[in-house]
Image (cartoon, rainbow over all chains, first blue to last red):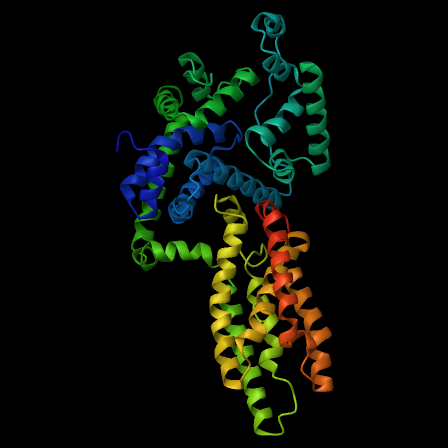
Amino acid sequence: MGAASEEWLVRRVADGDTVAFEELYRRTSPWLAVRLRRRCADDELVAEVLQETYLTVWRAAAAFAGTAIGGSAVGWLWTIAARRLVDAYRRRTREANLPPTVFGPEIVPAAEDEALRDTVGDEMGAALRRLAPELRQVLQAMVLDGLTVRETAVLLGLPEGTVKTRARRARIALREALS
Amino acid sequence: MKHDQVPAELLERYAAGDPGINPDELWAVEAHLEGCASCRERLGAAVQRQSPATTALLARVGDRLAAEIAISTTMPRRRRGQVLGRSRWLLPPGLLARLAMTVLLVLAALSLDLVDQQGRGEYPSLVLLFAPVAPLLGVAAVWSRRLDPAYEFVMASPRAGLYLVLRRTLLALMVVIPALAAAGWAVGASPARWLLPCLAFTAGALALGEVVGLSRAAIGLAAAWVIGVVGPSMLTATSPVLLAPGALPAWAALTAVVAIVLALRRDTYTGLRSGH
């Protein structure tokens, strides 16, 4: 099973192949766990989301495998995991009636980063570094993680209006930085 | 970083959960990892070195999954194989019940027609009158967030969109049309008179559903037909002009136009935000 692609593994999983499932888990779960842990400080919640994600994969692999279009199995995994994470936050917020605490302490761009900017010459990177942390969070959830405004709001514990405003401000800031 | 590998040092810091990675590098790492199997493999090794907490968590979840899966493989659902697994995606919950209800309604119309024919035979055939809107009950359930707990999940699958909608609609028609044909044959309502209107209404509901949501579209069209055509026909005991053979070219044209609209706006179904 050395060189087989993740897509092939998912197709095997659809046929009920537990060995393929274990291999898929072995290959993708460290990546998914690290990515989730960087978005959620609560390990118990991460474990829960991880478990639900792979159970969904096990049960619904046929849906993915049945597609004629193809697409990335890993991207599909992340879509499921991100939705499950948002669901978990939604549940938790409902139960505790408290906004969830997400994301570790955000780092402030250091002075040397500012100095580095010109030498690196990577305008986009520099713009991202200078972006206010709360704007970057919103951008990360929506651009990198592919979440909707509503899902982002749940994940960050913000009102939807605030998410929209911050997304707009982030866009303007980036455009200005790049022009 | 697009064609290269993530630098080892950066990968180790990422695996360790180091919060000090610059956001642009962090984003680049995450975007790269999603598309690069060999870097994911390297990350797996880095996690074992750098993060005992993650390693323990993975082992724990792995054990739980193994237990869950051992149970679900013994379930007959999986043994019946892939055909059923796939048909789950063709069949949203509620569709079968609605199709059964539709067949019952056709039978009810048929029995009323037969009673009427035994008697004076003065009313137009109910089977014929209801045939154009008969599939709508099923069509309404074809793409519904409210009825389908897996809706969001179906949406996320690569097959989502008009393709899936059409497959499910076809399935609904495959049940409803034979039932109508059988009932129509019994009361002498030839498919030639109702098949085109039936298709026009189905396609119309799908096209309108792109704008107002599928359930609302189906209910609206069915209500308009019942109030505007079925009601008056029964009250005046005359067969409606719209179902006369002369109206067929108009139905054919309408079906064609609606099908074109549906095809042009097909992307709406992929992002359908309808809450219905």
